[in-house]
Length: 470
Ligand code: HEM
Image 1 (cartoon, helix red, strand yellow):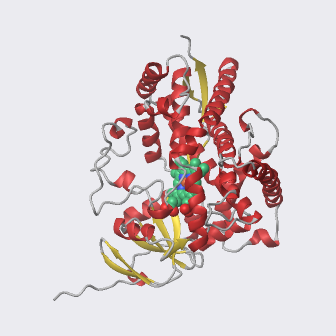
Image 2 (cartoon, protein in one colour):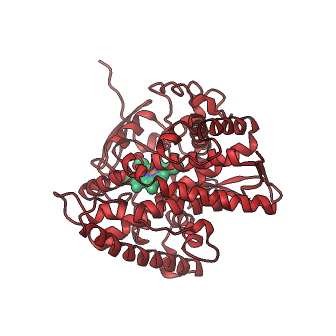
C-alpha cells in the first residue's frame, strides 16, 4: 500500500526576499502581475511568499478548481480586499459571504442576464454613438485620443445606466465631475490592499480626502436614484435596472437596507468600469497595430451592419464573430484580473497536481487565474502572438487536466456575472472603430506599458485617428 505525504506550507519553495518585508515590494508594485508570473516560472505552480506574513500562491488547476467551486462554504474572498472595499462603502456582492452573498448574487445575476442586457441595448448603442462622435471630432482636429480615458468614460456610462438607470454622459462631459474622479478609486484600492498598515486612517493625504468626497458624492447619487427606483417599483412595473431589482426583491426574500443597496450599486460601478475599459482599450489598440485584423473586422462590419457601423441590437452584434474573436484574444493577452485573493475558512487539504497540501484556516491564497494563457501552448500555440483566429470555429481545445488554468472571469458559483456585458461593450466598440476609423498608435511619450493596481490596465495608450472616407 502506498501512502501519500501531505505537504505543509513550509515544504513549498519561496522566492528570495528582503529582510523584514520579504517579498512585499514586488507584490505591492505596478509590476505585480509580472512578478507573480516570473516566480511561477522559477518555482513551479505552487509556492509561498512572505509579505511579511505567509501567503500561498498557486496556478495549480486542481487546487484552483476546488477553491473556486467550494464557495462560499470553504473559501472566502481575501479579507484584506474585502475590508478595504467595505471601508470605502462598497460592501456588496463582491465582498459579501454566506447567506448574504447568495441573496445579493441572485439580484446581480438577474440584472446582468441576457434579457436585461437586451432591454438595455439602446443605452449601449447611445454610448457607442457618443464615442463615435467624440472620435470623429478628434480625427478632424488631428488630436491624440487617450484610449483608456475614453474607454473608462464609455464603460462608466454603460454601467451607470444598467446599475441605476442614470445617464451620466461621462463621454461628453468635461471638468472634474464624478466621471473624472471615479477612475482614481481602483488604484487606491490597490494601494490600500498592498499597504502594510492602514496609514490613510491616521494620516489622510489630500488624495484620500478627494476619494472620500467622490464616494460621498456617489452615495448621494445612489440615494437620489433609489428614490426614483422606489417610485417606479411602486407602480408595479418590472425592474429594468440593478437598483430596481434590489428595491423589488423576490417574494421570499427580505428587503435590503439602504446601506446594502448603496454598497451594491457602488460595487457594480467599480466592478464594471476599469476591468472592461482595459479590455476595450486593448482590443481597439490591436486594430491599430494589426492592419490585417483591422481589415477583417471592417469587412465583417460592412457586411453585417452596412453603413450603420454600430450594431443596433443583440442579434446584429452576435453576427460579428470575428470582432468577438478579437475581444477574446485581447482578454487572453491582457486579462485585467489575472490574480484573485481568497482565504481558507478552516484548515483544508487541497489536492494538487504535485499531491495534497495542508492549508491552515485563515491562509491568504493568491489564485493565478490566467497563467494558462501563456503557459498552455497546446491550447494556445505561439501564445505571445495576437491571433484572433484561434477563437473561431469552436475556439481552442479544452485544457488538459493538469494544464494551468485560463479563467479570466473566475469560475464556480462566484464567476463574474458581468462577463457578457463586458464582451458586448468591447465588441460594439471594436466593430464601430474598425468601420469608422484608421487608428494609428501615437507613441511620442513612449511605449504602452501595463500597471497593476488591484486590476491591471494599460498606461500611455494613445492613438491618432483618420476618419474613413467611403
Ligand atoms: C473584462 C471585464 C471583466 C473582467 C476581466 C472581470 C473579472 C472578474 C473576476 C476574475 C471576478 C472574480 C470571479 C470569481 O470570484 O470567481 C469577477 C467578479 C465580479 N464581477 Fe467581473 N469582470 C469584468 C467585468 C465586469 C462587469 C462589466 C461587471 C458588472 C457590471 C462585473 C461585475 C462583477 C461582480 C459583481 C463580481 C462579484 C461576483 C461574486 O462575488 O459573486 N464584472 N469579475
